[in-house]
Image (cartoon, rainbow, N blue to C red; front, side, top):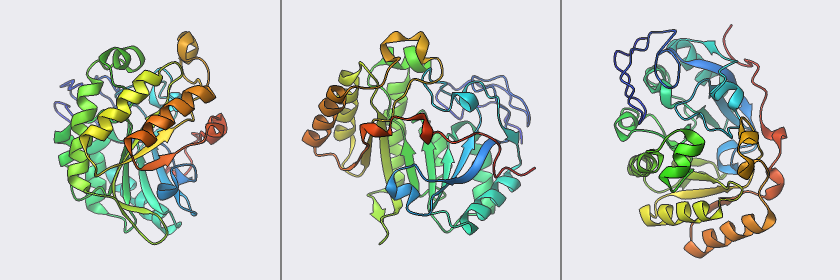
Length: 296
């Protein structure tokens, strides 16, 4: 593949991305690079179910958060194999045949062109999940309309300062609001099957950062003001990863008090969805990035 002037994400670098290389912020070429493609059991129950979600972890990222638990592949880009859209479509089919409850595209923003081509080649019968950092352009998302069943974005920050400090994206707040609004427009209200799997809808994740309960509460308030047609997943799994040790204020797990304070605001706003227990803050839930399931 080749992208002449890449504007897939809100950075709008406008650079040439050849098949194998690119000079944009994400540092990736146009062909998808995958670090793992296997059943994954630790997403929300409506995504993983009992059989697991067919999670495809893409290498590279347009955010590169300093605390990313997938830092090895998102920022260091030390693991990953370049594949074609045809091979990506083959992965969709294989994961579906293995019994995956969903096909889960993890951090696909910078490879949307290839993802779209692959989905046009083979659209799984199970829900296709677009699992992103929330740093997406509505124009890019519109190219996926009718191909994505479930949007699973993060909503990380409510302030320009935090977006710039931890993700190098001062425009994160503006971008995520527009992106989530477009996602909700496409999916409409949540629809579940009789097993509790989300067939259609937008489920917004928010990870509580230590020392940042005010940010979390502001994010929840902004979500509540946006629309009643989405679900929220409040995540307590933060563990210091990546370069978090260079930021003392976030170089720890969240406290019970921080967790309770944000959870109470979630309930007070009447937001529906999922709440993660503090006990989930373990690195055990981070899968090994070892090219499992990636075509040789």
